[in-house]
Image 1 (spheres, rainbow, N blue to C red):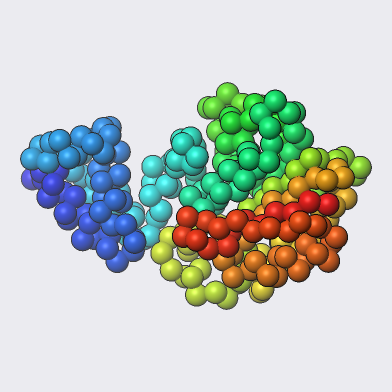
Image 2: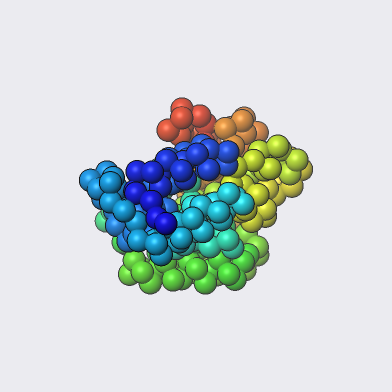
Length: 279
């Protein structure tokens, strides 16, 4: 027995309602993936009967979604800044909010200038790759403590035909002393370890060390801000993503490390999300 496209979506939407804020979208994305078609196909052919193997594959994916397994892990990819990037359970799933970090860096870097940029905690390489695609003259070094993350980032860089210097490092640990950059960017973990949101939605399926740095949520931000001046050229910029309620704490840390012209950008939800300053 099989199902029509519209009834399959209705069934999956009901199943996913308990684990997702976007159950219908999840259902449509998973079904389109099973069919090898764009989502528009689902709207054009709602009465189309699924082949038995398509229906069984779809049911299996929905069952995994309920564990919960994020859609990005089920598909093995996620769109970020209009780029399709490979994902895996080894890496944090790129968020739309993080596109603000990319936009801010691009706005600060003229396209004809060979900016030397360091990204800390690259994950699957989303930020570094998006920057290199839109600012080809950038010289980018991107680090991560995880070898698995860097392997995935290298694959994504190859897919998008960009060259980036990938270094396995615990923040600045493996960056040569005395090396200077025009800009340092990072989306570090910033959720407090005991925050209840870590037990909700898809977050339990993502790597905890990419979400939370410790008890306060500020531990990684503190390390980066304290060490960044030694790796920035005079006038160099530091750009950091952080929690919506961490703007004041980040600004205080930046002031203590002698950063100036501290500013904060709001995300799509009008929440404080990216702080920037220069040394």
